[in-house]
Image 1 (cartoon, helix red, strand yellow):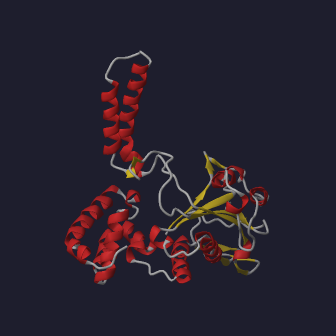
Image 2: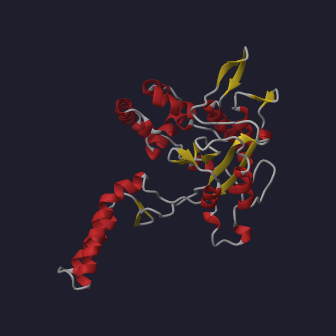
Image 3: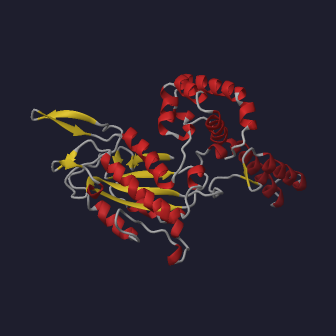
Length: 343
């Protein structure tokens, strides 16, 4: 499970309307029949129109300045292992979203009218998507780029020769192009992965638009990283404020596991990934202390998905963790190969 919470930045200010983001989320519905479309929904309603979403989010911004977010985007990306537990992708993810947003509300360390924040205080709209495309920032695109550049260069040469603006052997150039297409390190269904290509397999995920203001449009509820769970003193009384991201991310996993009877491996846990960033030594110590079968599955997952969130770790920690991982990987290679558990 990989969850992101972001505000919609536009330079130093923030988007003043949800219209652009809502339009982006409607892209998968283009060309589909009414019965095939995925509609927006919230805690109690289904088939909510894009127009209503924009109207409700844009109309719930009382007293917010240009330099304050009007809404947040929450993206919930279940892994391929988690998606395998779903019987009906759309219905199951919708059910999960509603349970998740209850935990989102509970993660606010504050009160409204003398009571804890509940999901009824949260104004949100969600949408299920089933497709993903490769973006320029994806590892596959970046590592295929030298081949893409050379292929484009050769194709331009072919076009120039065909127009009489250059000289050369077209057949030989086309053979070089074909070889480069095959040699590119990242392929999908026998074709070089390019930007904009749809990713194969189950790519279902959830987009949630949540208003910065509560449903009454009176109180600001920010899940932003600048507003961590804490207490401040106001009028001689301690008052809670902020949002506990750690609690929310952990609850997101627990709700999924309980709802779909999912047996989460160590390598998939939010707490373990956070330990990897803060203390790689502790992470690998815990990894090696797992029971044999669970450790075997963990290493298989790590080999497939790579070191968890490695790119966000400071260079010195990343290098140390990578060296430790490679040593451990060699050490348990026999155990992994002999394991009877497949994933």
